[in-house]
Image (cartoon, rainbow, N blue to C red; front, side):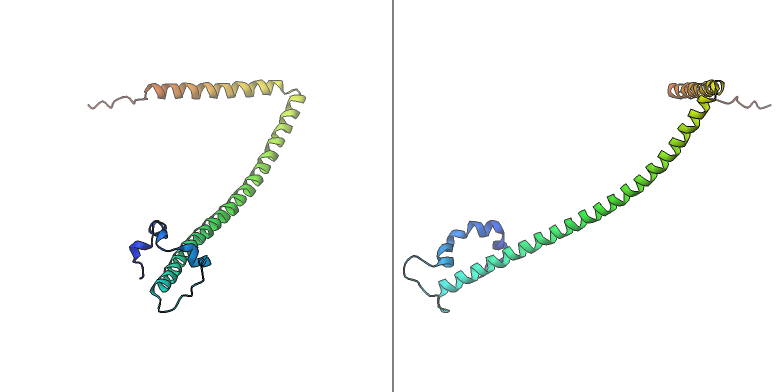
Amino acid sequence: AAMSARQRTPQNLYANRFQVDQRAALFGSRGPRQKFNAGDSNGSSTGSLLEQQNNDMIQDLEGKVQQLKEISTDIGSKVTESNTLLGSMSTEFDKAKGVLSGTMTKLNVMVQTGGGRHMCLLICVVLFFFLLMWGLYGRAKRGATVTMAPDIET
């Protein structure tokens, strides 16, 4: 008899495995070999049950293979995307390295030519802006706001 859709779950197939002598069906019994006749209800039901189990397992494997294929395709696209990103980052870092090395060269030239006065002025300007930003940040953090003088109506 064919199994209903409810009975085809792997748990039910596993639970019902003792209903049929699987070893005898696969390898034959140890006693005298019996041939399955088409009219034999036990032999035909055993064969159809085994074939149904095989078909269910094949469908399960096909689903798993499809999932693995999708996962590997996704991994491949992520790898390609990551390689593209790394390539563009490498180019940007090379550009930044060129700019920084040029700046360092100019600073070394300025220091060697006796630009101490200019360096001192530069440090003072940077320090002034740092203190100004620190003061404005502290004032904003305390909740102090700049208010305009109220309009006086006459």
